[in-house]
Image 1 (spheres, rainbow, N blue to C red):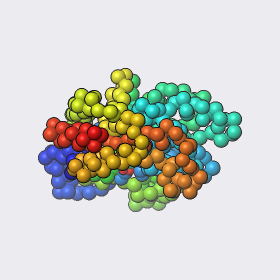
Image 2: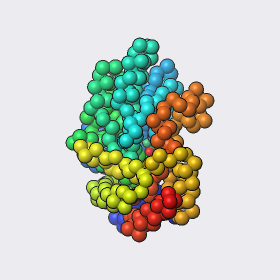
Image 3: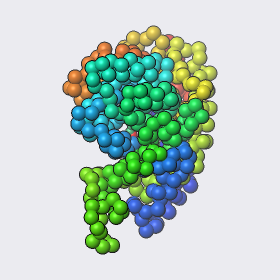
Length: 384
Ligand SMILES: *Cc1c(COP(=O)(O)O)cnc(C)c1O
């Protein structure tokens, strides 16, 4: 089976992890701050906090912004469930903003319209979480203008987007947001096996996220309530979690970061080849804005004018042909857990229409010409 995504592991990656295993620290050692410095420098952020997953990082990002019961977070329905779940973990409520039909990113026009209605009804979101779908950056400048006007905070779910550039600004620089979160799951651009990381330019948010990822415990006298009892002393000053990244994971991430440009370059080269090979087929190809650079996490096509049963038949045919196609994503509001919260079909029609026709084709740096030709042949056959 040709998978839809696959990590690229080099001998240098293996050596980096083995070196940690031979060292004094498997966790809370020097590899984590080193990895954080590498990512912060790469994306141009002042602070970076590595965690054991993007899900954890999204959770503490929401908490750091004070999201809690009675508050509201809005995100895109075309995302992995972790985006909106992060608000539910905080006891907050979730709502969604429909997508742009071309990029599948949150529609700024729909956001503005929903904000106007929310102001009129007196329930504005505290946090808006745009998701850079497939690595294509959202229009962050426009979202930031709305954030100023309507007084919400912004967390970028950049799980697909390490290496992406939004109008000249690296995703993660937080040029138009409070916090950006990356995922390092093996199907993403760069991997630490499991892992995630939050960037911010705000020292207060960085400090809060740092506390929350490690039990809410501090050894910093400046953060303590009263004097220290001695050199052994620590205080728990908030209810945090154990969301720490291990040193093995961080060493793998640091080693992988050296190939970030090569990974993104190779993904572009493979995507351009797909664009050429798929041009004659009745599929809508992914849209890339020339003013941005996408890290190209996913290559998701849409079957033109095809009803949902057709997509299912194409999907099954391709799986039988050994092609690990996937669908990104089932609209989150249609998941049973969200339906139980009151969401229903028809609420986000652009997302739902996209879902009925979407198929993600394999895309990863080691995808060969032969693999790609097999994917295209299977798709052509399935569509015939
Ligand atoms: C992968 C992903 C996540 C979760 O990432 P983990 O590191 O697996 O927790 C969150 N949001 C989106 C959009 C993702 O693709």
